[in-house]
Length: 396
Image (cartoon, rainbow, N blue to C red; front, top):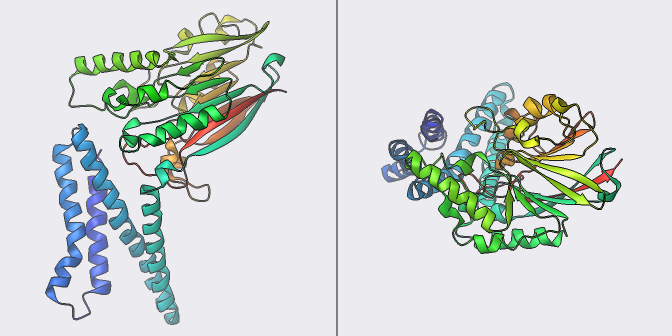
């Protein structure tokens, strides 16, 4: 990861310091030690970035180093870059309006300070600022017995995020149970790198229960392929262990399978597929296998009125395959995290995912994308706060 973005890291670290130096230090009679101290933070970050490209292995120790690096980069380098961008625009404006020069400097300084505060908040209380978000989904295919049915979805725990904050996972379980769910669904990415991240959390997560059960699927991280320091055989063994530990917690892990949920004479179908994303993410989902002999799958020509809920980790699966190949009414996904940053409804995630947060509807069919709870790499969240999602079903 660091290697892929190394040019961006180096450019921002060097460019911001050079610009700030000539704006604040060069024209003033500063002592030599002050000038050297000015360059020290970004220089250390630059050396750390180069070192991480040589040692990147995603071992637990290496992941800790990366978390520290990116946290400091966000606190130090990003506010400097924002100052550069805003101040440069201010210099251009002040050429046409000289009296605006001081105002432009104040604006650039304020913007930089605000970003520093945002980064600080996102790294401190942001990862634990848990929200409960409610949504409704109506369908004429929903049986009357399931009117008001409450599904609680949670996603993307990435348990390594909370290895020093286990109370957060306890809080997640408590808040889920407070919602009095009829069914609980986890939509993938229980871990980030290895199965060991579950240590100490099994007993906490096994406290989840609901009348119609707790169900889960795998996310892209759950295949343990990010642990590149492990050989293929060890990765496969860890995948099996991860699956077994989920089932031992009382979770029904669906690997291209379905379950029929019955209330009296009425029923709905829960479908779970393996991760099906666009490259470089896995494409292991098999809708045909998962649906099997479920009435309503287009290729069977059977009754299309069977109400189906699909768990599919990657929301791009919905438009690529779910909509054109099936008549599944509701799909639940995660994966995007909202890139763990959202401001006034805007997030860089929208440039990568057509559907990246909350509810989307098309021709009476729906996709709900949870922003998830943990962080794949950095324990940072601002705006895209960690959340659990309550979806209430209605007969339209």
